[in-house]
Image (cartoon, rainbow, N blue to C red; front, side, top):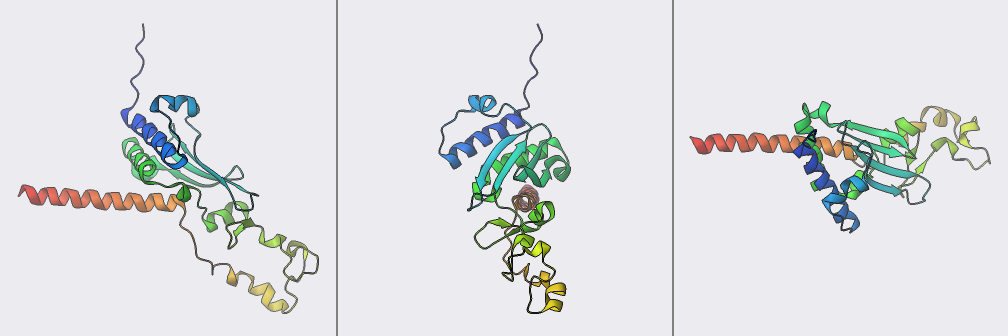
Length: 205
């Protein structure tokens, strides 16, 4: 009779942290034993899901426990992708980071979309209400023609509208993306490790 392969204890730790996160954030009461029932596909473990305030766009954040990656999607299209192994150098460190994320991350951070990443992936902008919009679908001069098809969508000054359109795009405060936050978490962890090592060396003297 073949023995079953022992599960990686670090993977099991991450699974526990995911269950704890869901219980904490969604006020649920799942046990660790339910993990495989809740998440039968380890490549797509849904951590957070929401809609924009106008409910026109879906935002999703998922983990992949086979490839050790994280992906944020809008309307099912990948907006940002993070490879824990590539960024951390080993599977063990990758799993440590994933566990840390689940223990310390918040729902709001996982669904916070980076404006630049959204622009690159879907050519959408974020307005002051947190809704996504296509800037070229607007009708800035109210002539009934969407700006995408309007030769001059700011009638007041053609030169200004042609060459200065982008000037106001970056005035809005940028929200840090979750993948950016993961990187800052990691650098904090590395700094802490260095400090801990130095203090241990100092104590041993």
